[in-house]
Image (cartoon, rainbow, N blue to C red; front, top):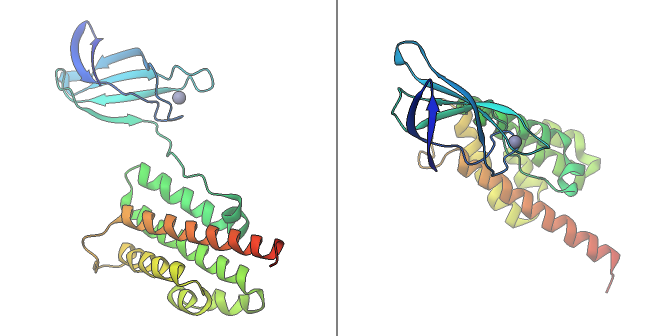
Length: 213
Ligand SMILES: [Zn+2]
């Protein structure tokens, strides 16, 4: 959305934020203040979120006066995926590491975020395998993730997506990329697919147990 703003008595059209970068609600963001940096280096605008429960301030960065493009908003908070109770019970570490990787990605630190997602995924897979086979927990902990997927995850649908998530995860932490056409967003999609398959498997098992034929 473009809008005219006035900064240091100059008015110009800019790309205007439509939602708060902290609470992620869409609304009428207010301009509180702004200034043109020395020697016209850029424009900084102080915005405020209109929602009572938030009301946070954040800064919008623009190029030289007259340049429309919104270059960035700070601070920001990542919009987190809500994971189900099933996943929370299986692996708290997965949730913690995933959230940190998401924060890194949000801050533009994609070189750090990739290995972070990979690590989160390893915790998910190993904790899930341990959950399914508690007597061999210590073997699972020591095994390579690929081995855990092929040996301890029985469901072929989970295996298919989990293997691919591991391949992409390895790409994120190795010097040479093997899957050049795939990136972090594909890795995140594969992680969320694995999460869904795990939920389906857990829920199906629960009903199978509760309602015997
Ligand atoms: Zn807000």
